Structures are given as structure tokens and as C-alpha cells.
Amino acid sequence: GAGVSQSPSNKVTEKGKDVELRCDPISGHTALYWYRQSLGQGLEFLIYFQGNSAPDKSGLPSDRFSAERTGGSVSTLTIQRTQQEDSAVYLCASSAIQGFTEAFFGQGTRLTVV
Amino acid sequence: AQSVSQHNHHVILSEAASLELGCNYSYGGTVNLFWYVQYPGQHLQLLLKYFSGDPLVKGIKGFEAEFIKSKFSFNLRKPSVQWSDTAEYFCAVSSGNTPLVFGKGTRLSVIA
Image (tube, rainbow over all chains, first blue to last red; front, side, top):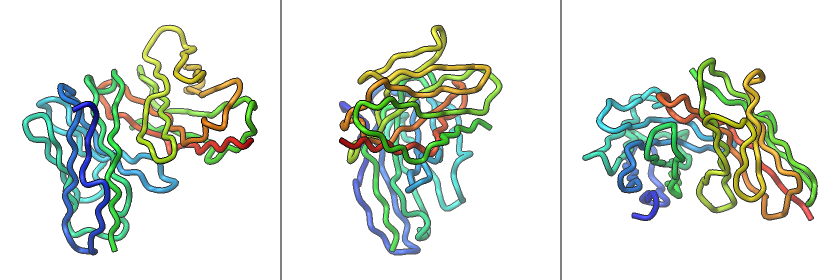
């Protein structure tokens, strides 16, 4: 596609439910990142994928968070047993070469846990 | 681990005023530096980037930034802001084999 696509754009879920957030990066981009944006907290790094290398999961806040990237393209971020503090905008970005080229961001998924 | 500090949380300027937003990073090696902007209701987009060479880099919409290695700084400047510059600005750093790390952002409000 022309840009990074994320779905859904908004998600309201009940505390304790699992959610899946999807990211479709720009075709051919080898690097894919997930960030969490909360008011006043900037962009918190969660995880990134670079080609076929093992993902860097160092930013995941707890073992309730996990992510996959299938076939080097689409990625899914899963949050299990959601908590109210998980409410935030989840942003996905991709770049042609990690760290050396511009990262293009999607519009994000606004997650609200009630 | 890398970290990025943006000291100004919220800056309010009148149109035509000059802008300087501070950014400091902590990392001892070679870094790539970025400024991103997020206009209200829009996604993040790149303003400018520094990889090597001239430490004064120019970006879109009249923005520029200067890399001062000795101060671990990459401050963003614009000589004369416009109302349309109202947005949130994020500084980011990467060392190439580490993830892109962002600061907490600075909200700029430009008033007429």
C-alpha cells in the first residue's frame, strides 16, 4: 500500500479481555516498530522487527504483551487480559533500513479499556 | 541504553517569534538523529534527520537543527513560526542497530 495501515482505528474493550491490533507496513520495508503513545509520555518503544532477525522485545511492559510478524510483512500486537493502564494509542511504523532511513508511521489504534 | 530528553513540555509563541526546542540524548557512540512532528489529528511525519556530514541540517517548512556532539544535543530551530506550526514535536535517536528511541515530545502552540 501507499502508507502504513493500522486496524482498527479505535477499539473499546472490557478489562480482562484480549485484543489484537494489526499493522500493514509499507511494502518492501524490512523494519517494523510498535510504539505506545500516552498523554504526556511521548512514544514508548515496545518491540521492533528487522528482517528475519529475532525481534527486539525489550520495550514490552509485561508478558501480557506479544507481537508477531508473519512473512516479513503484516504484524499483530496482542494484549492479553487488558488492564485500564493499557489504554493508549498504539502506533506502528516501518522503515526500509532500521535506524538509517525515515520511519513512516500509521495513524494508530486508540485502545480504551473500560 | 539510549535515552532522549526534551526539556520543554509546552511552548507558547506568538506568530513570527523565533523557535528553539531543546533535545539532548545519552549515547556514547555514533548516532542518527531525527525530529518528527505530529500535527493535530495527523500521524507522525519526519521534519529532518542527521546521519553525518554538516551538523546543521535543514528540513521541511523552514525548520533546521544543529547537531553539537560535545553537548549531545540536537536542537530544533525556526526563525519565524506560523500558526500552522502548532503541533507536537518529537526528537528521536538511533544508533543503527538499536530501536528508534523518542523523547516525550514538546507541544508548540502558536498564537496570532
